Amino acid sequence: MSLDLRRYLDCAATTPVAPEVQAEIQRVEREAWANPSSLHGFGLAAAEQLERSRDQIASLLGCSGQVVFTSGGSESIHLALLGSIGAIADQQGTPPRLLLSAVEHPASEAAALQLQRLGWTVERIPVDCGGLIDLGALGSLLTRPTQLVSLIWGQSEVGALQPIQEIGALCRSAGVLLHVDAVQVAAQRPIAFDALPIDLMSVASHKLSGPRGIAALLVRDGVQLQAIQAGGGQERGLRSGTEPVALIAGFAAALERLHALRFRGEADPMTELRDRLLSALLQEPGLQLTGPDPRLDPEQRLANHISLIVRAADGRPLPGRAIVRAMARSGFAISSGSACSSSRSAGSLVLKAMGFGLKDCASGIRLTLGDWHSDADLQDVPEALRRAITAVTAA
Ligand SMILES: Cc1ncc(COP(=O)(O)O)c(C=O)c1O
Image 1 (tube, helix red, strand yellow):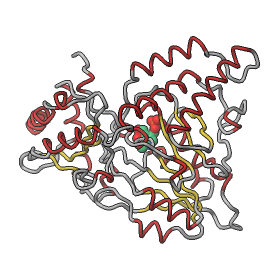
Image 2 (spheres, helix red, strand yellow; image 1 turned 60 degrees about the vertical axis):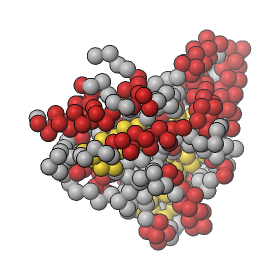
Image 3 (spheres, helix red, strand yellow; image 1 turned 90 degrees about the vertical axis):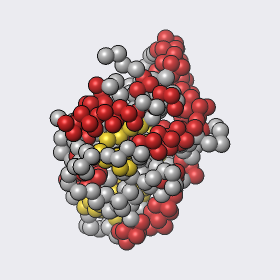
Image 4 (tube, helix red, strand yellow; image 1 turned 60 degrees about the horizontal axis):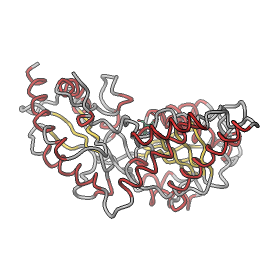
C-alpha cells in the first residue's frame, strides 16, 4: 500500500522534515559542513553557521540563556536531571529529593532512576482524571529536601497541558529548580522561555517538522549545570561531541517555518481543525475522550492532539494496538498510547495514573495532526475507525 501523508496522524511520534527545511539542511551540508571547532576557514564557516542557528533558535524560543544542543529530547532530559546535580545546594547529609508527575515520559523516569541510584529520593505528584497534576500535592512537597522538579508540560499520550506558569511560580517561591519537558509543546504553541518561571527546558526538532537527531536544552542564566558526557568540551563544556551544524540549521529553519505558519496570526488554525475532528469522532458510540476536553478549555490540551479509549458496542474495551493495525490496513497511521511505549502490550501507565481501570488501560489510541492537514483529509477518519472497531470486535 502506498503511504499517503494526508493519512499520517501520528505527529506526536515524529513529523516529516518540511521541504524548505530539507533545502536548508542541504545548503548547510554544502557550504558549512566542516567541524566548527577547526581553526581554518572551513571550520570558521561552520562555526559562524552554528552560532547563527543558535541565535535564531534562542530568539524564536525567547531564551537569553544558554541553548545546549543534544541528540534528542531524551538526551536533553538526562542532561537536565543528571546535570543539575551541579546546581544543587548541599543539605548536610540529607539526600536531595526530585519531584516528577505520575505521567512523565519514560526518558524522565529513566533519568530519575539514575538519580535514585545516586542516593536521591524520588516522589511522584498525582494527577486527576484528565492528567493534570494536583497543585496542592506539589505545593506540600516543595519543602526540604526537594531540590528539583521535572514535569512534562504537554503530555504526549493524553495531550494534557500542565499549568506551567502556576507550577513555576510555586517552585520559584520555594527556591526549587524546575525542568520542563516541552518536547511536545514546542511544536504546538509559541514559547517565551525568559518570561516563564522555568530554569531548564527540553525541546526537540523532530516533533516540529525538523530533522531527527537534534534537540536542545535551554538553560537559564545562573543555573550551574554539569556535563554528563565529557570529551572535546563543545557546547561550553556541557555536551561534548562535534556539533551537527546542518541538523542544527534544519532545527532553526523548522522553528522559523512553524512561527510563520501557525504562531504569527491571532488563532492557531490547528485547534479548530482538531476540534471538528474530535466532535465527529465523539459521535461514534465506542469512543471516549481521554485527557482534557479542549472544547471546554483549549489551554488544557495540546493543539493537535486527540486521545481516545476504544470500546465494542457491548462496552467491552478493545485492544488499542489491534485498532492501530486495523487503521493501518485502511492506510491511516495512528498510535496506541505513546510511540515510545507502543511496542509494549502492557496497558498504559499514564491512563492508570489517571484512574482508568486495568482493562481500559490497553484500549487507548492517539491521533495527532500535522500542519498540512485539512478537513478534507480527515473526513474519512470516523468511518475508518468505525470499520476498525467492527473488525477488531469480530476478530
Ligand atoms: C513529551 C516527550 N518527552 C520526551 C520525548 C523523547 O524525545 P526523543 O524521542 O527526541 O528522545 C518525547 C518523544 O516522544 C516526548 O513526546
